[in-house]
Length: 296
Image (cartoon, rainbow, N blue to C red):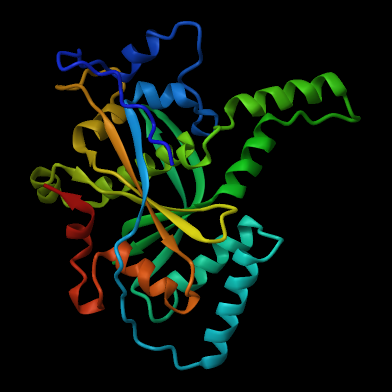
């Protein structure tokens, strides 16, 4: 996997607000919904991606589910949705949800994140998972993003109109990233999750912490690996989105780490995934939720 180029940020670079950065692109629409973000938005945010590296080999041991039928049924559905021909995002996200938030798991699930930018708010459809009501990680399937983009640029009419269809196809091509693992929409999801995490912390914790560490599970047409995205989202970066007209004290940057976790063997996949999300190999060793999502 190629690494996205490093930000062109000099050591003496000036710290600018998001509005000031947007004004440096006068001929382009910058303040748009995340579904339409492009590499230009990654540049404005000084965002880079790491190479995709194998996730650490760790396994969380969970209490066994007594109902063997439920276990076998979930496994069959998982294999059908992830290894079969008809990979629908509804089924894949539902399969992940059914196991990550099962009766033996400490996680619960919620639907949809919200990205706040000043007074604006964008809904980002996805699922996210909480530990003790503290958001830890989100999940989205690539086919959901593709479907949303197609709907966003589609023109509805009474009959087929070739020029309009061609225009929509060109627009869709323009906003579709050439490297799916570097989709700007994934960055928007990480930021939205980080905003939610920061907002759930007690005031004392926000005074002590430098920021939060949102994680995102990304499933694609790849039937071998799930990809886990994580980043350190500083409190000053979060403030930039809350107050886009205010200059930060120092120039910002955002480095997104990508790890890959193999689906097979399926029997141990969710144990390995939970160990990665919760940084523990047994439930007794899982940190308090607030400690799990912050960094100093």
